[in-house]
Image 1 (spheres, helix red, strand yellow):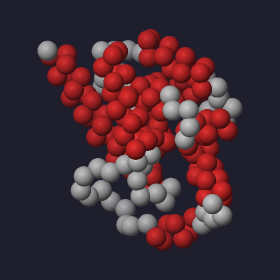
Image 2 (tube, helix red, strand yellow; image 1 turned 30 degrees about the vertical axis):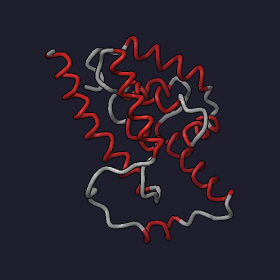
Image 3 (cartoon, helix red, strand yellow; image 1 turned 180 degrees about the vertical axis):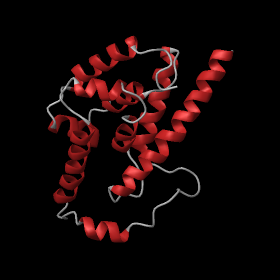
Image 4 (cartoon, one colour; image 1 turned 90 degrees about the horizontal axis):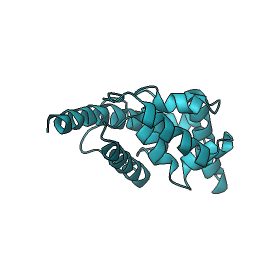
Length: 174
């Protein structure tokens, strides 16, 4: 019982770090609602599991951020728009703490819920490895395209992530 309470408390702390950071990253990208890609980027600051796995593919946080930004720009180009960073920045609401209930894209919601399920299955707290595994299980979307652009094999990435989760200390992410 105490283990469940400790994990729940750790998961709450993780959520309180991950979700506002994902929202901040989305706003920096000029988006109102964060998606799975922002959750993944935020998870790189949780612990070293996801960052370590990605380093094994010669990818770091800056590479991933650039690939995500490239995918956002490409999505705009496909509908005939060019990203104007100055216009986006001018249109963004002032920074600061988000107000009201947490809102996000469905991709973030699905990924976070799946990460929680994976952690429960492992009997551990949610960590960046669970987030990485959850977001890479989607075959389509910004994360899949960004990783593809970086030359990362999704099946091998999932395999390496599972291996890292198996060897991670039980307190990782918590």
